[in-house]
Image 1 (cartoon, helix red, strand yellow):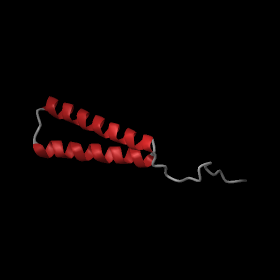
Image 2 (cartoon, one colour; image 1 turned 135 degrees about the horizontal axis):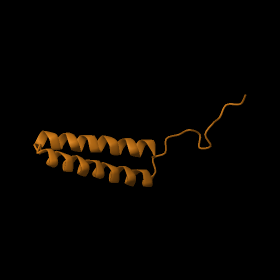
Image 3 (cartoon, rainbow, N blue to C red; image 1 turned 30 degrees about the horizontal axis):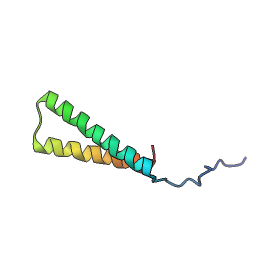
Length: 67
């Protein structure tokens, strides 16, 4: 049996659209984190910093994975 190979060679694409999408998702994740933290009454600096870190990591993942 022949092995299936991707048409693009299997390389990770890092295009402009992925970068913009990653930034948008990162901002969205942070805004949702902020809304939930505010609802729970936990708006300290470490919690907001953690939200920014989580948003940045999710945005980076979206950009690298080209989702």
